[in-house]
Every structure is written in C-alpha cells, then in structure tokens.
Amino acid sequence: MLNKTMNTLQVNLSEHSYTIFFSHNSLEELPALFQQRFQERQLFFIINTIVADLYEAGIRSIFKASNNRLHIITIADGEDSKNLTTAEKIFTELIQNGADRKSVIIGFGGGVVGDIAGFAASTYMRGVSFVQIPTTLLAMVDSSVGGKVAVNHELAKNMIGAFYQPKFVFIDDIFLRTLPRREIICGLAEIMKYGLILDKTFFEWTAANYEKLFSFDKTAVEYAVRRSCELKAQVVEKDEKENEIRVILNFGHTWAHAFENLGNYRILKHGEAVFVGMLAASHVSWMNYRLNDEEFKEIEKTLLTFLKEILADKDIMQFLESVTWDRIWSKMLSDKKASQNTLRWVLLNRIGEAATEENIDPARVEKSFVYLKSVIRKTDHVIHN
Ligand code: NAD
Ligand code: GLY
Image 1 (cartoon, rainbow, N blue to C red):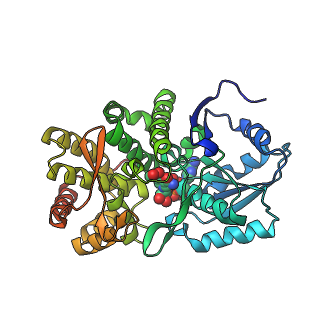
Image 2: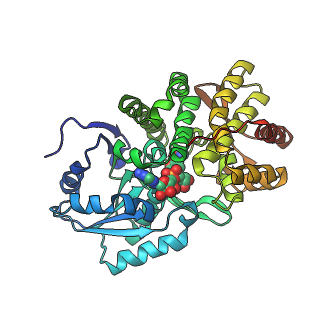
C-alpha cells in the first residue's frame, strides 16, 4: 500500500504531465509505485558500476516479491561514458533481454545515467516508458526533472538528444548519505543557479544554509530539493521545448559546457564547471550594466566559497590556467545555444531575475574571461577532508 504521506509535486505538461515523489528513506515504496502504473511490465534499470556496488543488492531485494520482472543494465561511471557507444551497449542488452514496447527504462543514478537512460528510452523502439530515480543531489534538483535527455559528442556536450518526459520521478534523500562531498558541491551549483535566476530569497537561504546539506539536515535537504524542483517545474511548464524562457536554466552553462568539453569531460565535473560558468556569466552581466556593483560582489563572494574548494584540485587548477581565450571562445560558439555563430547569453538583471541577450561584443566577453583567470590565480584554496 502506498504511503499516503509522501510529499509530491505535479509537473503539468498536458499529456506529458507527471508526479515527482519526495521520499525519506522509503525505497520500499517503489514496487507499489511501479505496479500501480506498469502492472506486470518488464523493468530495465540502467545503473553505473559505483551505484551498482552501493544499491543493486538492495533494489533486487526490494523488488523480490514484485510482479514486475527486473533487469539491471550496468554501464561505466563518468561523464566520458555518456556517449553513443554506451547507448549502443544499452540497446544491445535491451534486445538480448527481450525488452519490448511495454518495457520501462529506469535511470537509476546521477545525471549521467539519467540523461543516457532517457536517451535510450526515447529512441528504443521509437520510445518506451521512462522513470527517473536520481541518486545525486544534482540529479535530484535538476537533471531528473524537465525531460532533457542526451548523450555527448566528442565535439560538443549534450549534442544528441531529445525532450522526453519521465512517467514519474522518485527522489529519496537516503542516497545522499553515500555521496562524496565533491558531488554535494556539484548539486549546490544548480541549487544556487535557481536562486540567482529566479528567487533571491532562495539564493540567500542557500548562501546561509549550505553547510546543512553536507550534514544531511533533513529539513534543509527537503527544502532545497523541493524548492529547486518547484522552480524548475514552473519554467518547464511554461516552455517545455526551450523556445523561450527555459533558456534561463542554462545560466553559466555555455561557459560550463565549453570547459567540460575542453577537458574531455574528465577534469571538471558538470556542477564544478557550472560554478565557474556562473561567475563568468555574472561578470558579463555586470560588464553589460545589468547587475549592480553590490549584487555582483555578493554573488562573487558566495560563488568563491565553493570555487576555493574546487580549485584545490591541482588538475582542475592546471587545466583552467591552461585554457586560452581562443579555445574557449571557439568552443562556446559550437554550443547548442549558438545559432548562426551568435550566442544567446543568459544574464542577470539582478539576483533573482534573468534575461537573455544576443550580440554581445566578444571583446567584452573576453574581459570576463580575463577576470575569471585572474580570480582563479588569486583564489586561496581550501581543502576539506
Ligand atoms: P554523475 O551522474 O556523474 O554522478 C556523479 C558521481 O556520483 C558519479 O561518479 C556517480 O557514480 C556517483 N554517484 C551517483 N549516485 C551516488 C550515490 N548515491 N552515492 C555515491 N556515489 C554516487 O554526475 P551528476 O552531477 O549527477 O550529473 C551530471 C550530468 O547531468 C551531466 O552529464 C550533465 O550534463 C547532466 N545534466 C542534465 C540536465 C538535464 O536537464 N537533463 C541538467 C543538469 C545536468
Ligand atoms: N538544465 C537545463 C534545463 O533543464 O533546461
């Protein structure tokens, strides 16, 4: 019987609407959720090696008495496995194990697994049902909601994909307990993004309370995850296919994707790159007379708290120091958000309000790159154990 007290949020997208379930250490609710929706259909969980070591046995045991036949497809860990080669391996295992049109594909993991599982679901037999069970903070607050599914191309990130909404999202905070500190920081990048583009109060709450997320404070985690999902859902409901307002969710991401790609998806994690990108994008906003001095300083101070820790990694530091303007600029021009060599920039008017602008003089953007490099060089690094 389904726990009637589980908190939910509805994402309203006409025939693609779905529910996000917010659960607290209640994984045993999962079989009932699947049976209600999918009766006796086969379930194909896509997981990676790290999540398999931690949770595969538990998931198998929870589903032991279920009418749904469970299959688990394991892929390699890491952003550099989010590609067509891994997608092909998934398709092979689906075919070998008799996946049919009624089968359900479940992304059980972080954003990498969610994105590639969703990509597989959107294309296998022209589309089968898809469910997201995010296990990282970043996936809980961002990638599991909104239906963007994709794999990377060697030349550019998330270049091959679709908009394909899940049938439901199941978020349980128990998974955060095994998540390394570095991954919590990655999730914080997207949480801070929502505050910066949409909700000043949330930004200030996060700046004051982020430590509580590292100690898994139940109330703080619940609030941060739910508020992020609410803000994302509000934007996606207005513009599912990113024709207009949804683009603001990419604040800092043109920079971030370029840095990730230049590091062959191995040096900066996505959330870390988003921190770097949001600082650069805030500087561009300030240079373009949108953001005032006081708010730019407030953002800089807050983002640097996290960048100090990110830059303590020698490989990241050396990599960022090695990136030249010409390389980052040409990579930014190959981003999905570029059209006919014009970039659509997401900028801040103020904390809590974003806007887009095209045709910013590249010389101005280069000044923000020079600023970024100088900040990186000057920042004292903080190492947390
Ligand atoms: P990730 O999926 O690589 O996960 C981070 C690390 O945590 C991995 O090593 C993973 O194995 C490990 N992990 C996962 N769950 C764990 C757990 N409970 N305990 C311990 N370790 C665990 O990275 P991510 O930050 O979750 O996601 C980043 C990806 O998400 C990028 O590819 C990015 O492009 C994508 N993304 C997509 C969207 C979207 O709307 N579709 C939005 C934001 C980001
Ligand atoms: N992460 C950007 C989006 O979902 O639109």
